[in-house]
Image 1 (spheres, rainbow, N blue to C red):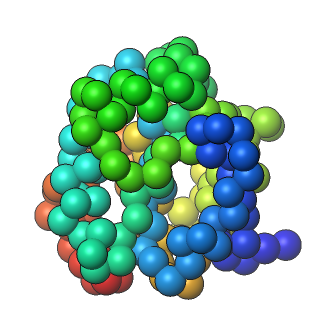
Image 2: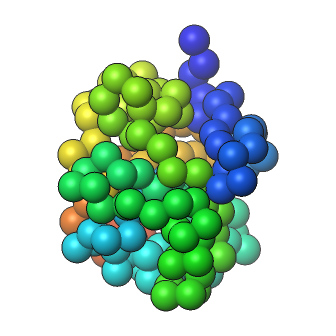
Length: 161
């Protein structure tokens, strides 16, 4: 059983497999996203955080999902256009897929069930965030309401950079 986030892969927006070890050695902020959610404006905070810290080794990795309230109905191309046009995102977006339930992507099975004994449990809603250290270990999990600009969030990121 893999014990590092970097031992997984995920589908990119083109449907191609992307090994997550591409990001090995970086701090990763993994977020399940949706375009029609009350938390969708967090895309701005995510982009601001990415812009502020990317040169210090932060990657924001967005995983769109339609699991909660059918709030991500678009295709991968529609999601990409929405994020880039409305929020000017430049961080990696992965292909839309399940992040909860029996059909969740393997990387989310790892993050919610295996990565950290004190951070287990199903994702409750869109925009839950997982902070991964440079070695692929889950360090902290933030619920949907937590914004990347919140002091606790910022402190957690800075402590890993």
